[in-house]
Amino acid sequence: MCRRDEAYIVSHFREALAQGHIRAYFQPVFASIAGMIISAEALARWHDPDGGTLSPADFIPALEKHGLIYDLDMEILRQTCAFYRELSDRGTPVPCFSVNLSRLDFRRGGDERLFDRVLDTLSRYDVPRQAIKLEITESLMLEDIDTFQKLFRQFRDAGFTLWIDDFGSGYSSLNVLQSYSFDVIKFDMQFLHNFTPKGRQLLASLIRMAKSLGMHTLTEGVETEEQQDFLVSVGCELQQGFYYSRPLSRADFVAFIDAKRDLLGTEEDKAYWKQIGRLNFLSANPLDDYARMEQAERGEAPAADASANAGASIDSAGVPLALLECSRNKALYVYVNNNYRRHIQELGYPSIDALEHAFNDHRSDQYLMIKKLVTDTISLGTRQTVEYVNNDVYYRLSAKCLAKKKDKAMLALRLTTFDSEREIQTAKEMLNYGNSLFSTYELVVVMYPDSGISKRIYTANSLPSYDQAGSLSESFRGFCESEVMPVDQARYLRFMDYETITQRVEASPKGFIQSSFRLHWGSRNDGARADSDVGPWYTARVSRIPASAERAYLLTIQSHPANEARHLDVIARDHPEILE
Image 1 (cartoon, helix red, strand yellow):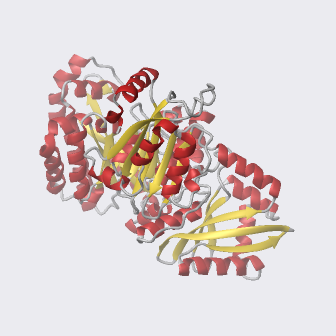
Image 2 (image 1 turned 180 degrees about the vertical axis):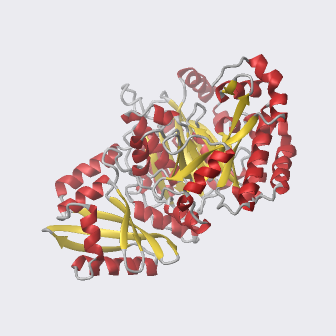
Image 3 (image 1 turned 120 degrees about the vertical axis):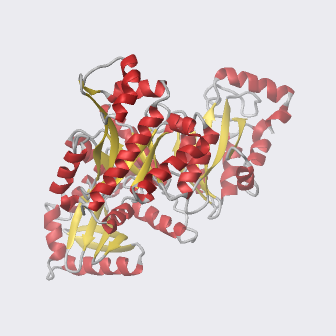
């Protein structure tokens, strides 16, 4: 990479664009487990005939600063569409492509210009809208909300797939995830550069949260086998980075996919693995969660699960979980986590291959057991469970069919062996999960008003399980009576009124409602009286989670800085009506 100063970049940009010195390069995106090429990201590369290749780290910020990034992004989109058409005409199986849209594209492009320009470019090269994925950085969503919301709806309504890019790069906010419905959340490469135990825990927590909100997950910057294996183990569906391939020129990309034709899955393959990718590997109850998601999509009210709020420990690689692909006469494991491996060794099988052989040996008891389990879960579509004894160990094997294609089906398996001491330790690990998640929030809860249940995603305090109450109204009241200071309890119950809360959120032009309250958190340790009017202030916000199969709302509680709390004390004393 050669270095050029800002003045050189700005003065030579138009010339470089006109003479084709700026070209789209393509970096493949792979499915974590299947190893298929799912898509490729289009990236700008500037080849200076006088000095070599300019670094994107130099020319991208310079073009953004001088308002030239829109022209670059539109040219990369044009080249990508032209390349798609070239591949299609030559008979090459074409992956979809993702292109980046800068925050400045939305400003300079205006409400209609950007949308129309994208549509015109795709139409010019006869590219279907589902073939181009739009990557949008989260910083834009926090800067120009009105323009972005309008364009977001336009692109979504027009059939485009929208990805949130570089999540975690410095602007991350729960507000982004609760305000917009993205198809894919793309985690910034910095998570892998800081590949410490704490960094891994945080990334795994984010992946688990994204899946609980119905989003697919992609991590960029994968450079080592250790990183690749980790992402597979925590259920990240898609991966991108130098471990798989550097960004490639058009000619090199054609050669790359020609040499890997067997990795270019059909649309049926992609749909199959997309469905499988919805499984939350780090849930405490992954099979039940998947079944509830399917129920919600069918318009059925899923039953509450008291343990669904817990997360599985990253250190223990989650609950014993495996993926088993079954065809007419064969069952093959395609994914097994470490806990599952440990459990099968307790059952007397030295390896996955040995268990696989037993499953496929028509003379074995295991074959008869797994055949019935597979047949029932595929035909009925529900979770099926068998209990058995092997090697003097009592165990339970549960299965849920995730996806089907032609003569194959993918099953998620959960294996439980019964050892009371170990089960207690596992339960403790589950309760400790999530300590590194969203340190700026004290409490995060997802509420489902139609089915009357809630799921706690994270808490920074030791709280009783209010979200396991018989109804949402009971949950609200239990939290209020225990955690909210008496002076604010009546106002909190009005704010969280179960009969009107959803209507108030839907009627809000901001898409959320919020208010401030005094809670006991922190004050108990400070020796404050339980009936005191003085205590730490917290903001409670309720927001709609868009595009959920079932109506869902996010409750977040966040502490106020000390200087704001002093102002709130004055307002509460002199003008309490303002807080209503």
